[in-house]
Image: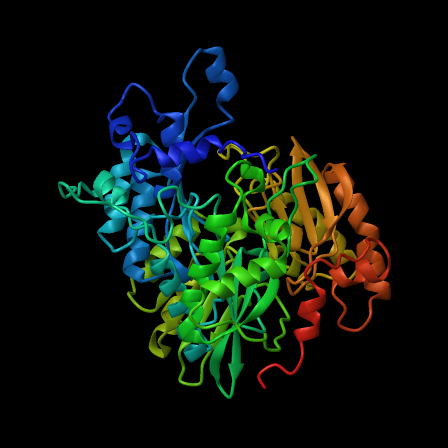
Length: 565
């Protein structure tokens, strides 16, 4: 006999929130504190922001019996990561006037503002709305920012997947007007009845992430998400999408019942049916996901609890048009191709490397001047870089001159160009170790070792996070580093360069010196004994450095043939 388990506290907060309003509006008026209440701090995630504090300042402020140095991180909703030059200039202005003066590009193709004081929250939201941008559902137990492969040089295919990303985002937005009322001052219609036809009054058990991939490029790490769509190109057009479910990167140290997981390919749908597929997958997770234990509430655990066949059957029951057999596809990379790409008509695209996604100083000024030209689009990638897209032939020289003037067109080693880090300290409340502030120095040391063995140009994927939640997707990279404590990390090896295989834990609790000492002889052996075109992640598996992980890989390999037929 099943015993009904109690709901998690977050479920009660959502249920009693009056459709995500809670006491947020009232809390903004309490000027005696820089914080909001704990319950409202959970609800603000649905509005696109988190309450944080500067952990570097905690000890001294504690000694002085002062309140923590509270501030807020605000994350935007930008489906596919595309903004206009005028929108970019508005983002820059808001970062300078309302935040800490920097722009942080994320692994979900959007922007985060950091260091926002409570009194600046409403002006920032209003500034975004003025240029038709928002932060709705960028965080929280809902579908979050939808990401898509960035490939503007593949004009027609890219237009199709970008449109799908926007369509998915709009269709799966919460319908509550709470954001508009609290931040824009919209008046609630008296006597109106509010409903959430897709989500229901308590939304999802946990966050829900969608990625759209355009083979052969897997920059979005499609197998790392709750739901994925892999574009299938046949006879020069997108014939439809393979559907993946059950990916997710988060875990908790010391709790083996939590784990990263790669998604399973469950079938194929026509382009016109993709949004319905997304809704039905989401509603199965809504109805069957774990609302008692939030550590077990992601879709990947629902799939494993129900069984893949049962989960897929539930989705099929709800679909107007059933999924059919998956089509062949193949991936060959996850990284961005940096520098210029040009189309036959002379239109150009420049992919700018942004180390760990942080834009400040000369880069911020250079991008201001480029945006002021008023041409093209600014597109954020899932690798935390920025594509200056659709530059007309007569403007390329002007853009190039500005890139050179501000030192933005320099080249980087393969390792540095393939590195990603989460924010971590000092602002993330979950961080156990450094990430963004430390990875560049570690990459320099590892890069020196690679250069000793003639491997400077090898684009080995390396990712670091300050905690096991996996925001930079470390468990699917060739080298993964996950924070355990100050200066200490778990080292993972053996992920696939094309993003279809999890890596494996290789060493626990290693510091920077130990990481270099472990990897240097592996780099040397890789340089001397690698097979033709063999990637580092494949090498460490073939040579027995780590055992092969089969989770989520066999089916992908079986489908990786006859692309485009």
